[in-house]
Image (cartoon, rainbow, N blue to C red):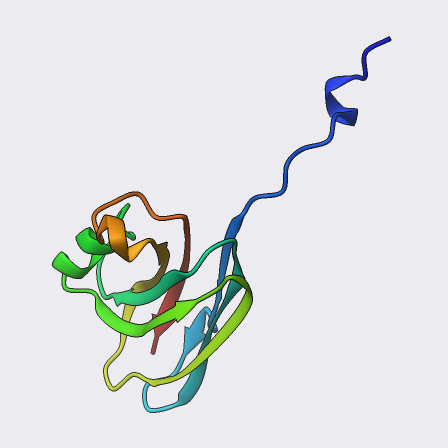
Length: 122
């Protein structure tokens, strides 16, 4: 008798990315942006801040939209955690955009994983 669809085992994802930062923060206050996840193979972790609008589908498009790079680092294989301290000097609403990129394919290729988080600076 076949197993129900819910009982079938699913394959774990080889690439995962998570971002954390406070959803609201004051100007002039130091806070930490944290990126963590796992990568089956070596990848480049890129985390940018966009002052306006949503995150782009690729890291290359995000950079062209004048995203400010906070983190640009090689990670993997395996689990990783990267912290970066940030201070904003002017208020605004924006998004943190994270990408795990295979640099050999270029920044405009589909990322192995993406994550985003909205942030408001007072």
